[in-house]
Image (cartoon, rainbow, N blue to C red; front, side, top):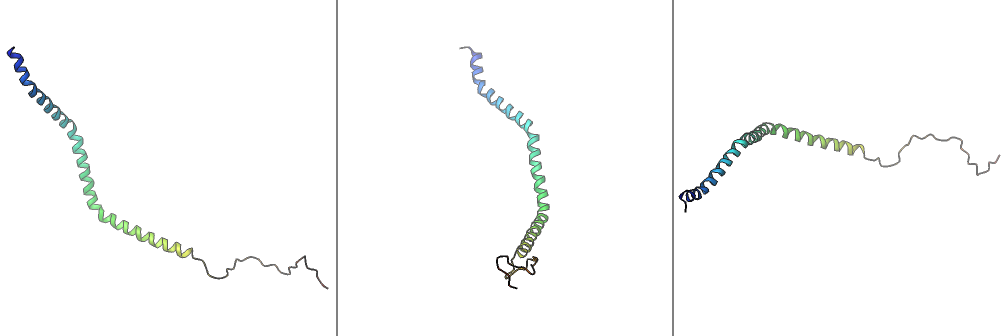
Length: 104
């Protein structure tokens, strides 16, 4: 056996690990900025939400109360009147039924 071949066989696991470590480092360098940007955007959105949640809760309660008021008004407007209803139709005066003979 050649001593140089035995040395390369022993170093192959370390070269595989070194290549994998270099790939992980390159991926981390490449993806670090987008990941930090996404995490920063999530943090900023959470901060804005923490500030605006009380205001949004107030708007939601106001919208709910408005919906209740509108529903009650519509329900009251749609109620029917019990009893006869005047339709404001013109009445016919001196109407004679042509089927009945007139007596003079």
